[in-house]
Image 1 (tube, one colour):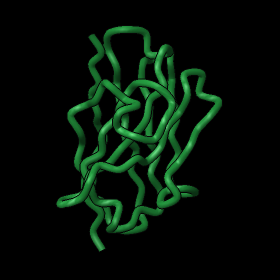
Image 2 (spheres, helix red, strand yellow):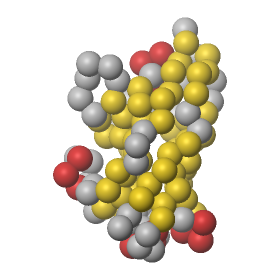
Image 3 (tube, helix red, strand yellow):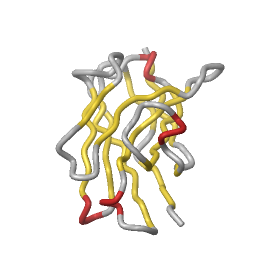
Amino acid sequence: QVQLVESGGGLVQAGGSLRLSCAKSGRPFSMYTVGWFRQAPGKEREFVATINPSGDNTYYADSVKGRFTISRDNAKNTMYLQMNSLKPEDTAVYYCAAGSWGTTRRDYPYWGQGTQVTVSS
């Protein structure tokens, strides 16, 4: 069984920063590609970023490229999403996920419960 728990969400002003964390229990963390998705009210869940098992390959959605950084610490079974220069349109519930390399929901069979990020203008 794979369990994922996000933390670090909150309320921040536009231009500010937040760091999300995702802790994993169960099978070894290093086995999986892990990624972040987000879902704003009334919208589909969308891909944000992903990182491969060794941490040497990442991929970002165009909307966050240059502002967000995904990273992982396999020894701590944890991955992170550093979010800088936040915009109101970044407001969403952010989900971490574990699975295989890709940008669609079906690439990731394991999901956390989500953490709310709200960016005020």
